[in-house]
Image 1 (tube, rainbow, N blue to C red):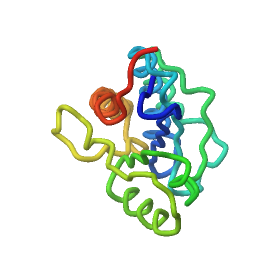
Image 2 (image 1 turned 120 degrees about the horizontal axis):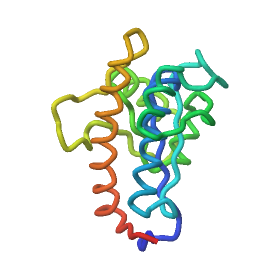
Image 3 (image 1 turned 90 degrees about the vertical axis):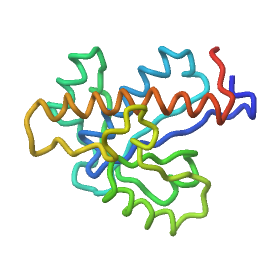
Length: 169
């Protein structure tokens, strides 16, 4: 359990439209925390900085790539990030610098506690600093995104264990 308090750590993954990278991060991270026995201590959501796809399911290519790794994203629906997210979430994790800048603007409108980071700050293999947008590419881009997200998820879980003294249920 989270011994610093009984509230779960809340995490929001954010990309531009919330149909490729951030729902993939939500699904992968959900799997990783279940494998780590931490699902009782962490809440997860995803959002986009833009309203292009509100209410839509993830991109079919993201669904297919995740499914090949045993991750089901089909129940997720896109939503837009809002200033209130900085009050609700402990961590806001942007997939790239452009979305980081958009979120920084939102944070200025909020009075919340959410700590804004680039998600790949937590990657153990720091070869890249941003999760690239695979939307205009082929299926190999979605596979690369999954690889980056899996690595950053594992590093982020290590961070959460240290910072929040998270223990398995």
